[in-house]
Image 1 (cartoon, rainbow over the protein chains, first blue to last red):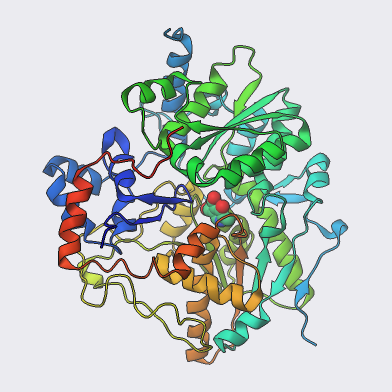
Image 2 (cartoon, rainbow over the protein chains, first blue to last red; image 1 turned 30 degrees about the horizontal axis):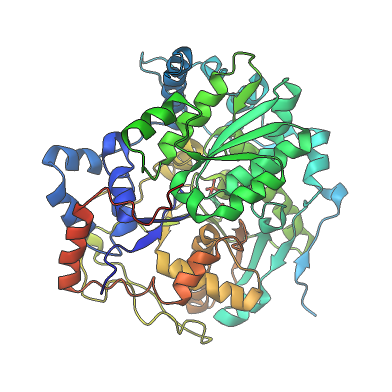
Amino acid sequence: MESVDPSIRCPRLGSDVPFYYCRKCGENGLPCFKVFDCWWEIFDVVAYLRDELSPVDFERLKGTKPKEKVLSLLEIIEKAKKNASEPPAQ
Amino acid sequence: MALRKIVLSEDEMPRQWYNILADIKMNPPLGPDGNPVSPDALAPVFPMNLIEQEVSSERWITIPEPVMEVYRIWRPSPLVRAINLEKALDTPARIYFKNEGVSPPGSHKPNTAVPQAYYNKVFGIKRITTETGAGQWGSALSFACSQFGLECKVFMVRISFDQKPYRKTMMGVWGGKCIPSPSMETKAGRDVLAQYPDTPGSLGIAISEAVEAAVSDTTGQTRYSLGSVLNHVMLHQTVIGLEAKNQLAKVGEYPDIIIGCAGGGSNFAGTAFPFVLDKINGKNIEIFPVEPAACPTLTQGPFVYDHGDNAGYTPLLPMHSLGHNFVPAPFHAGGLRYHGMAPTVSQLVNEGLLEAKAVSQLEAYEAGLIFARSEGHIPAPETTHAIAQVVKEARRAKEEGKEKVILFNWSGHGCLDLGAYEKFLAGELTNPIFTEEEKVKAAEAFKNYPRPANLKSR
Ligand SMILES: Cc1ncc(COP(=O)(O)O)c(C=O)c1O
C-alpha cells in the first residue's frame, strides 16, 4: 500500500492530476472550485477539507461561483496591461 | 442491410451558423461599475469582427467561403447509426452519433479554431496566443493557424505538458509553438516561477500568460483566442447540429433525446442549439448536457452505479470506487454547478429547456469501453461522459419498451489519451477503495503539500 496519492482526471485540464494539484490550484491558493465534484468518489474530501481549511476558507470554497468568463477576462486584460507596461526585471 | 453512415455531400453543407442569441434573452454581464460591459473592452484581445459576432443577435450568420474551404478538409462529418452499440445494449432505441473525431486534430475544436483564425487574419492579425490544458484546443488552433499562415503560441499548463508530450509535437508539426506554463516569457509567469519554481501551473496562470503575450505586442498584431464558453464559439460549433439535422432528415428521423458532454459547453451547444430552436417552437425533445459527477448531497444519498451488463462488456468493473458503504459528508452544493459553463447553456438550463445530467468517472470509462468494443472508435475521455448518458437512456428506452431516437455528439477520439485507458484497464481507477488505515495515510500525505514529486524537472 505504497501509493496513497492517486491521481484522477481533471475535467478542466483533460489530464491526470494528483490531489495536491487540486488542493492549491484555485484562486488565492484555495482548492479548485471543482474539488468536491471530482474527489468525492475517491475519499471523503468534504470532511478532509473541512478539517484542513479555516472555516472562512471552507465557506468561501463552498460558495465559490467564478465570475462570468467575460468579466474574468476583463480583469486578466487589465492585469496584463499593467504587467506589459513594466520593464522586465533583470 | 441497415444503413450505418449517413453522409452529406460537400455542397449539402450548411452555409450559415445558427445564433441562439436571436431566440433567447440574456442579461449582459455587468462590470464592476454596475453597467453592462461594453464589447469594446474586449478589443485588446479579440479582433472587432469576432467581438461583433460575440454580441450579434442575427439568427443566421453566413460562413465565409475561406472557412468553408478549410471545413471541407473533414466536413461534413459522418452521422453514424451505432448499430453495434444498440445490439450490445439490447435496446429498442435507435442511436446516432455525429463523428467529430474525423477532424485533423481529432475533435470538434477546429469548428471554431478555423473561423477564429480566419477572422483574425482578415483583421490583419499575424499571431494568436492561447492557453491549453491537455492540448486538444492548442492542437486545433495550431492546425487552424497553419491553414491561414498565422503564428500560434500556446501556453500549456505544466502538469499536462509533462504528461502529454505528443500534443506539443502535434502543435509543432502544424507550426504552433507550445510552451509550458508558467514560463519566463511573461511577467505573470516569471512572478509565479520566482515564488514556486516547481509549480505544476494552472489554467488561471496559463490564461494570464496568453493574454499578456497578446496585449504586450505593441505592434497590435497579436490577439488571444478562446476555445469554449464564449458566444462566438458556440455559434461556430452549430455546424455540428445543423449537419446532423439534415442527415437525420435524409433517413426520415428526428431525435427524441439529444446528448453531449459539457465542459465549457461548446460541443454540446453546437449539437443541441439548432434543436433547441425547435424545442422553443414546441417540439418535444429531451436535451441533456452531461458533466462529470457532482458531489452528491446527503439527501440524494450515495451515488448509485448502474453496472447492468447485457453483453458481457463490463467485467472490469466489479464495484464502484468507494465500496458500497461510503457516504460522503453532508454537503449541499445545490446540484450541478455550472462553473465555467457557457452563459447561454446555463441560461437554457435555468429556463428548463435543457436538463443537466452527471456521470461518474468510472461510469464514463466503462461506457467508453462498451463503445470502443462495439463501434470500434476509441472515444476521448470527455466524449465517454456523453456515451455514459446514452447508455443510461438506451437502457431506459428498453425498460419503457420505447423506440426512441437518440442523437449524441462524439466530440473526439481518445488516441492521445491512452494513458487514461491504460490505468482503467489495469484496474487502477476501480480500486482506490481506501481502508481506514489508508485514509489516514492519505490525509498525512496530502498535508505535505507541495509535493510535486511526480513532475519531471526540466
Ligand atoms: C474531445 C473533447 N470533447 C469535449 C470537450 C469539452 O469542451 P466543450 O464543452 O467546450 O465542448 C473537450 C475539451 O477539451 C474535448 O477535447
